[in-house]
Image (tube, rainbow, N blue to C red; front, side, top):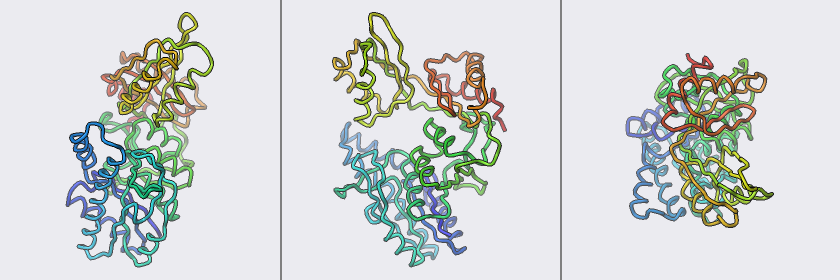
Length: 402
């Protein structure tokens, strides 16, 4: 059996945890399985490297930033290989160039194109545990690229697909997918299984268990995932196409504080304006989520939307530089906001879900600024100061507690 195991930064944060992970991997290896391990950078290494970069240059070139950040994963895979060697098990660490993980050239947010499997197969044939850097690749110029935050999850899923692995296990600091963040909602319940679509919504709406790009890839290639804790032996959550259990009305509640609202006010009420705004942002790889358009006075309209807080500065600069082309009178932004969402495949066949959510927010005196819906989710934008209280209230309203 070929198993791909991915461990996040907190799982390899220090010597003891590295040895703990090494022993867990060796257990599977000694049962006769082939083991491929994907690692993130240790603990808060990436944050430390980012801080150092911004100390040197407040606006560092993205190519150089990727060059720097990639050292974090190289450190953790080398140390893990040393730990396994100390425990008497043959292992080899490989970086993205040595494997040859080919990506696009968008530094800081590259997409995987293909993975060469020959080197990994060669090391597996030698009965070694293969330990690979997550989060990074190489582009057509042989430059190092990174896949963006959470990119190690994507690396693991891509490897599982390319190697036709029998299992893909994602180890984090939580032991599965919960109905809400247990740190905010103490009585949140662990889900035994979740569909790809529900997990996609969880991941893109702020639940930090898995990166949404990794779930998209798992769905596309039919890679069944298991989310587990590296610190306990508890059973995790299985993520797959169809879940056996009766579809719950609402599977969970997610919150995202990395969000800001932009309002482009007083644009001409004519065809093509929305296209110009969102095409401009798309060309610069800025994702937009909730969008509201309202008709104003004198043949003018306002368009409001949300972006990640980390993209706010760049988005505002772009919009202001193109204000005349966009026919905008003013462009404003608001930072103290957050998104709260309910997710559930059972929503489509049950009326009244939105009303129940809005009623619970009203009873908690939480004001709703924007609303967006899809088949399996309802998202509202609220004040950031209300988010934890809102999450607990909505969680209780749908009886999601353990």
